[in-house]
Image 1: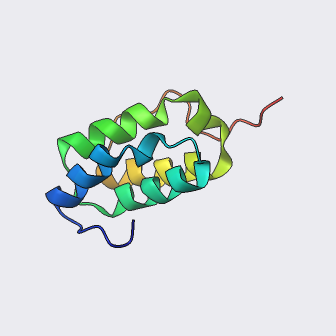
Image 2: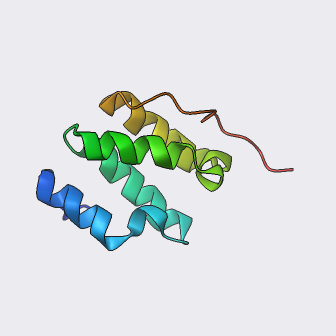
Length: 88
């Protein structure tokens, strides 16, 4: 993730790679942190909003924190309930 260029080509690469939906949550976390570093654009805003509404991402303390940071930076739509929700 750290090697991605912080421009539109980097955004394309992160979306094409599928890491934002990786089953390994550590990989997904790295992708979310990278999303927060990209310049704001509609595709990034939309991705952050969509990812923030995913139940798996909401239930993980670190994923939800990374998406919250990305959402604030990119002024993404409000998430349905992005606060960390501990699993029962």
